[in-house]
Length: 366
Image (cartoon, rainbow, N blue to C red; front, side, top):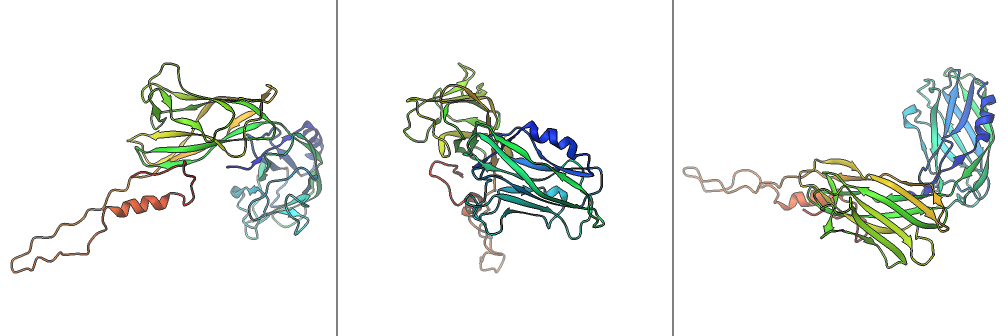
């Protein structure tokens, strides 16, 4: 599950960028509205001249931790479509400790062989900040920017300071799942937020491929732990028949004792039923009518971060050869090497599953 959330960028950047764009090239942070359910902020290049290489260094204040990976690298994604394989993004200063004393990012977009110009409006890199970053305004300072033409000549490039505003918000993060046609698989769902959550409502939609398993008239969903939460899981529309005409499961969670809803860890789970005739492929989990409130009852920006369910291909069991009838004068020996038993396809299917799963997470059944 994603441990980061995004940023909201004020009009301070946009108003100042008007002047910046008078130069042959300029850098702009975009999009301008982000929160925990919308995760990445990008650095975009706008040009009226051909630019093949870009370098920029941004400084951010202590308390605005840009996300980092398990190997202490920035939680940023370079745009592979630019075809600039020698590009990099690094924390500054060199050898700093992420989350402790790093105070900036240096982005270098380049390729030793590909000297093609970068299309104006391209996103160079997308980066994330941690979900728990407190709602506030954070200055972002551009301390250096350079650009080169395809021929290696310097191109004037503008990059202005701005403010980044982190909004309070929340997101529901489903765990991806997988299984064979006809399987029932259990997925965990977690809440992410940077403020206290009081309630969450969403509809998990069903279709001909993915439905929610039922125990009588009740969807097979529940809390993962004994928590002080008023939880309701119900098929929709009201009065529908599970596995027939139900189109969604309403999930309604609210604090039972005034404490904030648990975030960051799997909070509840649902068991999904995959259709017997489902074709192999990836199917998105779809949600609708999603909303959330803080502990005071005020509405919050709330989104469901998309997840997918993979239907694995059925692997036909290998045939176990029978002994061949002996030819005249033969000794009745089997001709040809023996084939694997039916257990071979089970092993192949098992190897497709992740090696590390929680006990209630997805399980592939033959």
